[in-house]
Amino acid sequence: MESTFAIARREFRTFFGSPIAYIVLGGFLLLAGWLYFSTLFLAGQASLRGFFAAVPVLFVVLVPAITMRALAEERKSGTLELLLTLPMEDWQIVAGKFLAALGMVAAGLVWTFPYALTVAALTGPGTAFDWGPVLAGYLGLLLLAASFIGLGLWGSALSRNQIVGFIVGLVLCFAFAFVDAFAALLPESLGQVLQYLSVNYHFDNIARGVLDTRDLLFYVSLTAVGLLLTTKTLSSARQ
Amino acid sequence: MPNSMIRIERLTKRYGPTEALRSLSFEVPRGQVIGFLGPNGAGKSTTMKILAGYLQPTSGKALVGDVDVAAEPVRARKLIGYLPENNPLYEEMMVVDFLRFIAEVRQVEKSVRAARIRNAVERCGLGGVIGKDISQLSKGYRQRVGLAQAILHEPDLLILDEPTSGLDPNQIVEIRALIKDLGKEKTVILSTHVLSEVQSTCSRVLIINDGQLVADDSPEQLTSAGEGALLVVLASRSGAPLELNHLHSVLSAVPGVTAVEPAEGEGHGTAGFRLRFGVEDPRRALFEAVVKHDLLLLEVRRTQASLEDTFRKLTAGEVRKAA
Image (cartoon, rainbow over all chains, first blue to last red; front, side, top):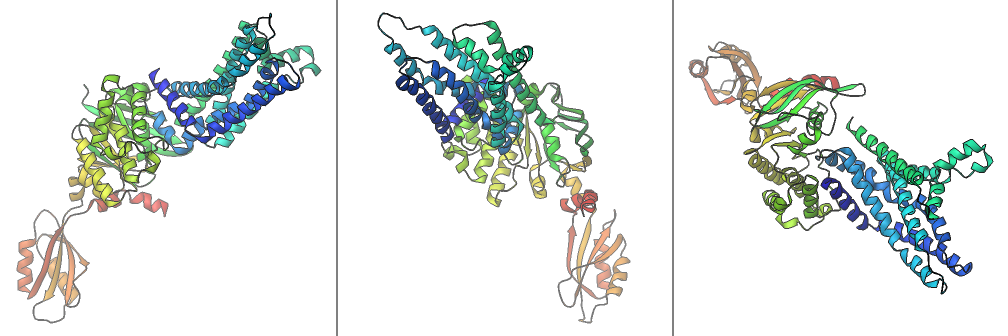
């Protein structure tokens, strides 16, 4: 466990020591803020609905941008050999990278918390602001990010080129975000399968404030699959 | 505690269709400093990578102490300090942060962590640069960081893959001295193509070629195995021109000499020869013959086959194949 945390800490620090971190997180916050304030001022609604609808789409780009260098860079610079000869299991390395990336996403999300506070402050007198859906929304975002990180890490593990890692991650996240886009046009049974595979569908459930184990299980499974594939790909460097 | 530190048993490694190692076997007892020699592509790095727990062997076994590297990788890697070829390091980290990171991953106990890092920094002479980013360091210092990283957890076995490649002569001397010093208490296996390095640091040499062991001996034995020779330079006493054929027959007739080959002389009026000899030392008879034939002996030198000669002889097949 200590080794995993050491990997995570190093990764996290390196990320925030590079300009990429500020560009990526800055871009994310700018877009999220713009989407939030446009609902607030243009539509005149004190609601986080627009924000929660937009962030998963932003994550499709943000998460692969965060994970792209995680393993590709190790491969490229040769430090993978150093890492793979340290006394720990391959999955511990992947777990460390995963925790670091989740920390980075969380570090970005923290800055959107003031939006929730503003909305709470703007709620009309007499009506209590319902924090339930907000907290559930943030939990949902973290779960969604976790599953995207699994996919993004796998993309990064596949190549020594960060850009390839980014594109593979982007395509995978995009696919899982929009897999149900045409569900309505398809036969119902197939449509339901696609809907079940969609990260957005499960996120909407959670963001409504309904914590269903089926939705949790979906995210946990998708994350696990991503991390398993990453570990397998990483181990294949030993061949 | 098992006696041997490394045991390699019929190790084979295939990369696709190419066979990098073919049934390689050897054993290294505790405390030896081993030089691992071979031409490029002979399988040195592959062997070290398997031993260090990076690559999986195709078949065969590699044991460190009594731990099978493939079966219990994590336990085996704890016993090893490894300096990979090209010494990959996290460029953007400060030296001290990097060493701390390695200590954390290696789970060096918190109570001794600071002391271990200080010790490694001191031994590798990194005191002046611990606050610098690794990317700013010279090659010599980078190599020291690589070594510090490898000895941080006080491993029993050090695996150093070309520790002096790409360094300038001063840096090479420093790193060699450091390795020699480390070899006093640890088992060290180092690969190199610099043969003098082996002579100055190693107590035993393994030469591999084409994935197989071709020699396993002390550097002294390997250099003397190429049998002795005398290099002589002759001149005429009277100033009369030298007749090479005549000299050749005179030298061949000296008791003890088994072969005579022409060698370089010292310019006009001199002639050089290389005399091979067997068990009997021909020097006394040589002097008598020289006097008898009214010749002048300008030089007699005993030469030893250099490690280069032995190395070239043993690995010549590879060169021929490549040509």
